[in-house]
Amino acid sequence: MDLRDLLSGLFWLVISGFVCLESTRLGTGTLDYPGAGFIPFWSGVILGILAILVIVRGGLKRKGERRITDLWTGVRWGKVIWILFSLFLYCLLLPTIGYIITTFGLMVFLLYVMDRSKVWIVAVSASIIILVSYLGFHILLDAKLPKGVFGF
Image (cartoon, rainbow, N blue to C red; front, side, top):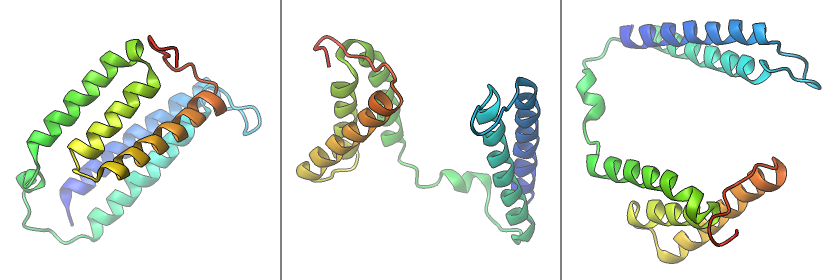
């Protein structure tokens, strides 16, 4: 039995119960006419299911000799800092440069600089990511994405 899994699972189970309770107060509505609490309610249900799985897994697991510090062994902190910096820069540049160019730059940085992929793979992957996300957010969901100084 792993006490850490049990405690973390119970914590998230309580959080999911709170989310479900509060979202029912908002009104969940129906599948055809969802209310304000529809998505939070089902998110809470999914969170609860995942928490129960963690609790069950923690109950079945034998007590290991691992320590909490073992979780951080082998983490490449330099890459973590660069990724956080790139996301911060992305948020700063997004309104002025625009969604397409800024997201393409972020994808190139993450795929090429951080992962050292081949140039043609980076270009194709970044283009596909831009295309799919643009179609999903701008066309299907009609979300207003920042156009930036270039107008696209």
